[in-house]
Image (cartoon, rainbow, N blue to C red; front, side, top):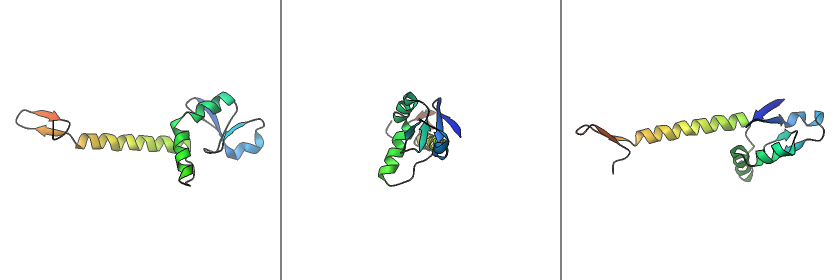
Length: 100
């Protein structure tokens, strides 16, 4: 099962028996054909997120699930940012917070 993450091919661990001479990330449970892709993977937010989950004794998330969580968090952050703005009806200006 081939997938991509930041343009690099990623193989799920289920295919470990069919692939020889692969590079792995045990934390994220993925395989790589190339050592360079593995090194690039180690620098990704997805890998760092799964490292934190591993420390907390939680299972890793897939790349797709991680991207979904990132998008959801961005939406929540944007909603919170919009909720904090204050509109002044006298001067018809919008301010970022109560203290502005």
